[in-house]
Structures are given as structure tokens and as C-alpha cells.
Image 1: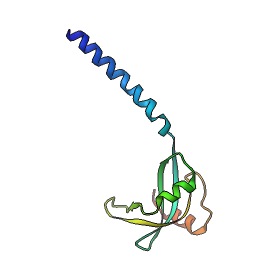
Image 2: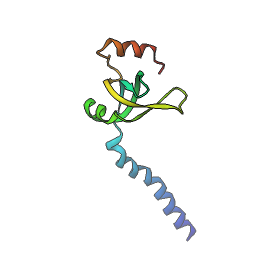
Image 3: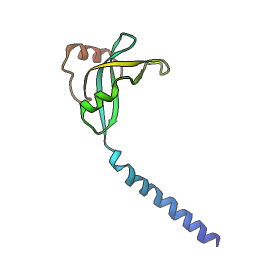
Image 4: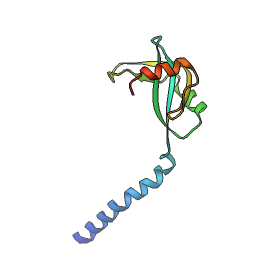
Length: 106
């Protein structure tokens, strides 16, 4: 009896990751973005994000009102507006965003 129970539990344990993997396949595509933002504390920053696959404009619209944390990881400020977002492998169009990116430690 114990061997059958143990075998059933072992089979369920081995099959469960495969079942979960099927459910997460649609969310497994992640896009890395970098965005030039205006925060409520009157500062402009370049911040990186990772998001599920979607267009840049959809991603930008979801950012407003979201919290961005400072380097200490505890304090932060809310996103007031989004100037520009591009995928992480592309170059910003504006000079201000490129200059901020150059001095931002990632």
C-alpha cells in the first residue's frame, strides 16, 4: 500500500512542473524596456523594466502612476509622465534621455 502511494506521489511530483510549464508558456516572452520618465519629485530619470510581450505604447500607458524605487530600494517616487520608452537594445531618440542613460548605473 505504501509503495503504491509513494509511486503515485512521485508521479504527480514529476508531472506537475510540466503542467505548470504549459500554463506559463504564453507569459514566458519578456521584453526589456528602458524609459525616460518624469517623477512626482520633479526629477527626470531613465529606468529599466521587464514586461510581458506587448507594444511600446501599451506599456507606456501602464507606467503612469507606478512607483519607481531609488537606489536604496526602499524609498521612491511615482511616475508622473513618460517621455519615451524603447526596447533595451535600442537608442533613445532624445539627447536628454541618452545623457541620463549614460550617467545611470544599471
